[in-house]
Length: 214
Picture 1 (tube, rainbow, N blue to C red):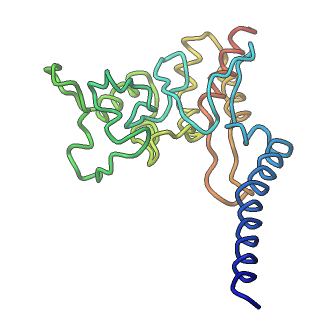
Picture 2: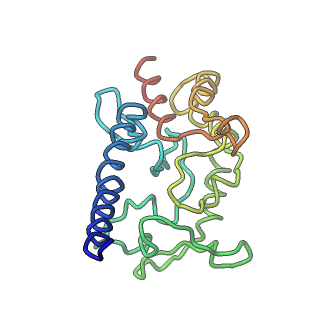
């Protein structure tokens, strides 16, 4: 067999494999995802009652108002800072990421604040005092950030600890809120992996719907 024949066969094989792996396979996977898992394939987006996209089940959002279930703290403020107005430096590690500070590091307690702020407070201690003042039993996930800094969940214990505060402010029955928490709690994957978590955005959307219906 001549060199030209071997080279021609090698080129044809390369082109065929390239078409299969770079064109056919990706488009088949896209079609498969859109048909079988359309929500997941499009970002697991969440819509409000008006049909507007308000977020994703995969990405956390900052909720700090006493009228809502509070989110887990974030080292990047869930990437809501503007790159040109990032005085607090929340985006210095990119759009996600942890501080990588050990619990024994004093800097873990300090809030990174703008240089014009004369009173650098302590974030963890401040949140601890704020939660206790509001009558919320602090849990680890209400005080410390996650590894990704974009965690959309809090523990069921953290959610239940905020029931009394929200019920008082909104004039709702605590049992109504406990029911919402149960309805928005994601169980363990396949029943054995991970821990149950409450999606804060979905829970707060359900909370607003409950308020408007009451």
